[in-house]
Length: 130
Image 1 (spheres, rainbow, N blue to C red):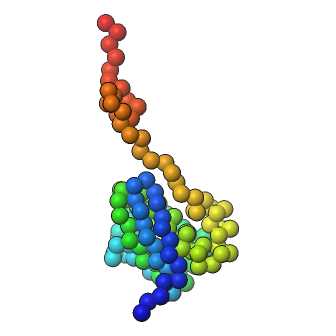
Image 2 (cartoon, helix red, strand yellow):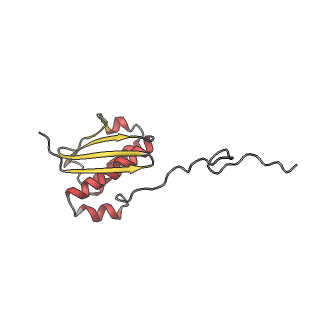
Image 3 (cartoon, rainbow, N blue to C red):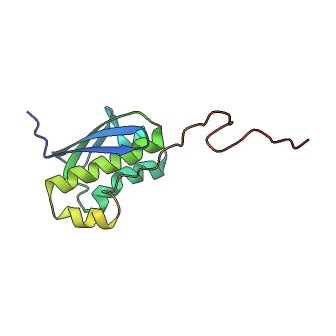
């Protein structure tokens, strides 16, 4: 039986990631696919790896992530947030480093809703004076 050392829930935009931290060699698996294959853009894969690099625990843990909702960018942010929470749970000394790098803060920016009588959230229909 595999034992989870830490569990973290990360959120970003409309994406929600459940992160399970296990003893291992540094594999990151997102929705049953390797992280570098799931996040094809290098910047997004690096964003997911950042909590491990900051806490210098790249080869200590295996990470299993289940992420749903949102787009690929929001999912990467959710994975990083959840991984940070899990690392802080496993070792409380990681909390200070993760907080200093802004990885424990939930990015609350969301898409503004479309208003009635307008073309978008802020864009209006063309105004004709005459």
